[in-house]
Image (cartoon, rainbow, N blue to C red; front, side, top):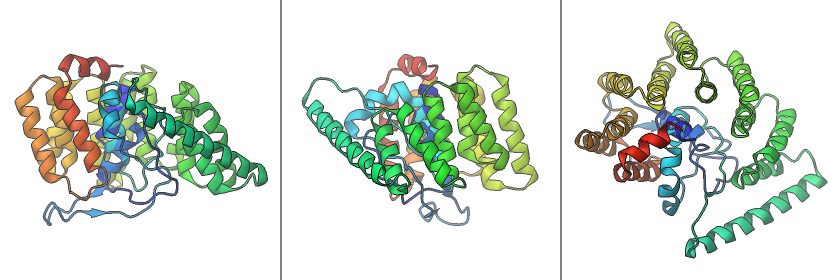
Length: 345
């Protein structure tokens, strides 16, 4: 899970989703956000000729957007999902649409916060019952299906949610979002073979789809496939270069650097992030990732400098700004050993 989150965090590059077709989840789990922090960052487009603040954000919708977790939950899941959160976030922010965010409930301690959590759980149960009743009346009600998927994912019922996702695929076979979500569900359920097959099928149709590349990379990583992860990404990078797909090329390079970070190749990751910074100093993503690397290397001064540059570059209006700032804060506060341990999980 940690590895997945980190991937999320670093892949946001050229476009960002603003609208959603499904209500946002309330308490995302780091991985699951994994998918998907990265996607937000990678979908931002930077114009080298314009001031940093004049960055254009795509308004294309996402089906299941990332929802920044409440501040009270940040510290609870940051370390456990740092890799997933970071990698997913940055990956998915880099896509035209961001991947759906699937979240398991965050475990709360016995405190006043539990009351709010209990109320939220009760609300989710009620919403789930209403949606299921709607589907009993009309099994092809797309909106009800999407709502049921969303609430079941929030409640950690992935094995039940996937059944509704597959119904959506039957009704909307050309909607890639549902195929991505299906693969993600199987990954979350631990069925890595099935998830791997689904991600590969998606990439046969769209070989440069960043969320699918990220998903396959994470599945292969969990499956301990080692160098094969980078061989797969290098192949996609070659296609992007050959077709002169500049945005995709940069996003894939960010993903490659993130995977080196997840695997513990900190020096290699640092060099790759620095290359990305040298090529485009206005892109805030590499600075954010670079800060995480320095923090893991226990180079606090360098980490602080990278985080400061990130904060000076990321637009105030950026949808995930508050969430990413919280992640940076936790990265500064957590002991290096704890971050390192969780990154390897």
